[in-house]
Length: 111
Length: 115
Image (cartoon, rainbow over all chains, first blue to last red; front, side, top):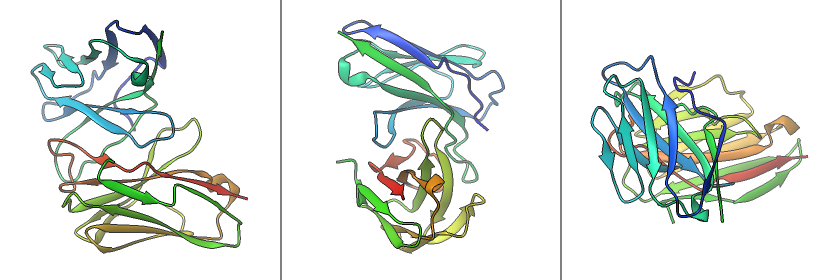
């Protein structure tokens, strides 16, 4: 079962920041937060992951609350090509753990 | 190109047919996975292979038969499928059987329609 809760859908204007929330109130100390996205009819694409600290890469920023019970994925300047389903996943990096996807947030970027 | 290639991209088959899906990765990864994505449902993990050995089978019906001849190739053999098996079948690979630092790399999938 997915261990995260995400809103089913969000809209964002092109050029604005898209802030996608994720609740993971039962996260344990050794679990990472991973974000993937899936553009229509394609395979999911890795975006970013983090454990405790905020992370940034060329695609996005990940803000994790101090208690680690929630996080936010930030796309700083959304484009139409960012329209996709975004999945927040928590899991360890142990070899018995796998990526289990929930239903994600469908982000629609509009002109 | 993601480094994980799936063929064919689209497949239509009858319920009495036998077909195979192919997945190939050139990333030097040791683990490969099959996922199924039905309409309006989350991705479902079907099989996990590590170093060509199946390490997980998530209660998948026997009409789906995976094969991993080497660490770069993964097949999903299909026979006597049902219309409800119509879905997007995704292959993924990772460095090890663990999420590790960069997670999984997915292929673009095979859109299967059973008629």
